[in-house]
Amino acid sequence: MRRHREHDAPAPCGTAVELPWPARGPGRIFFMRSVAPWLSTGRVMSAQGAPDADAQHSAVSQGATETARPARPAGRPGRRHRGATAGRPAGPSTSGALRLTVRDVHVVGRRAPMLHLETLTLTTGECVLVAGEPGQGHTALALVATGRLAPFEGRVVLTDADGVVSTARDALRSVSAVVDLPGISEPDDTLTTATVVAEERSFARAGSRRSDVRRWLASHELAAYGDVRMDDLPGPVRTALLTSLTAERPGVRFLVISLPDRHGGEPAAWWSIAQAFAARGYGVLVQCSRSSARDLGATLEPARGDASQRATPVESLRAGVDPMAAPPDVPELTVDLDERPSAPQDAP
Image (cartoon, rainbow, N blue to C red):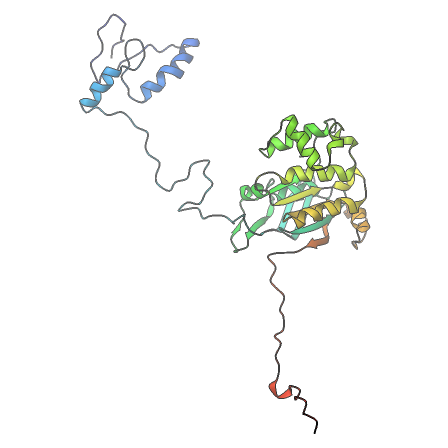
C-alpha cells in the first residue's frame, strides 16, 4: 500500500488509501480525533483528508458496502434504560401507597459495628420516631434505609399496594431523600436561607432565580428569614424549611429527618412538622436522641455501661395511618328471628 500525495491522481473507488500517521505531537491528536473515525467506518478519503462524496456514491453503485455498527438486539436495555423489558420485570408502582421494610440490617465500620437493626417498617402516611444517642448508627440507618449505602448483611425491601417488591438500591433512592443529615446533606452554616432555597430548588428542577426564591419564601411564610444564616435559624424553622424543600424533589415519597433536636427548640415543634408531612402522604422517619424521645412521651430505658455507645436505635413512637394495613375484623351482626321482641297488642 503506497502513500497517497496531493499531486497523485485520485485513488480508484473502493481502494483503501493510506494517510500520514503522525508519531507524536499535535498532529497525532488531530489525526486521532478527525481522520481516524472516518477510516474506522471504511469510507474512502480524498487527497485533502475529507470524505470524497463522488467516490462514495460510485462505491455504493458498484455494490461496495460500508462497515455498519451492529444493531442492538430487540429487548436489550441500554445503559440508561430503567423501564421494564422482557428480561427485567417492572418494579413497584410509585403512584399508590408504598412500604419500606428494613430486615436484619448489619453495618460494620472501621473499628466496630455501626448498626444492627432487626426490623423496621415505614409506610407512606406514617411518622416513625427512632431514638438513639449520637454515634449509634443514625447516619448508617439513614443511608441504608434510603438506598444510599449497601449493608453488610440484610436488605431493605420496597413494596407497593399490589404486593410487588423490589430490593434495588436505585428504586429506593428514587423515592426517598435524607433531610439535614450531619456531614452528608446538611447545608453550610455560613450560607443564607435564600441561597439554600435556590440550591435546593435547582435540585428539584424548579425555578431558582431570585424572584422564584422570594416567591417561595413568601408562600411558606419565611420571607423574614431570607438573609439569615443557616446557623442562626431557630431549630423548628430550619427543620420546616429543609423538609419542605426536600419534599419538592420529583418522585420523593419517603423522608428521613436526621437529628432535628441538635439545633435546639422544643421536640414537640419538629415532631408536629413531621406529622404534618405524614398527613400529606409522605412516609417520615425521624431520628432523635433518647432524651428528646422521652420529652415526647416515649418510654425508654437509659443505656448504661460500655454497651451504651453501641446500642441500636429503637423505635419509640409511631403516628399516622397505615394505608396498606389490613382492615380490622368486624364481627358480623346477626339477629335471631325467634328472639325478636313481639309487637305490642292493641288494648281491649
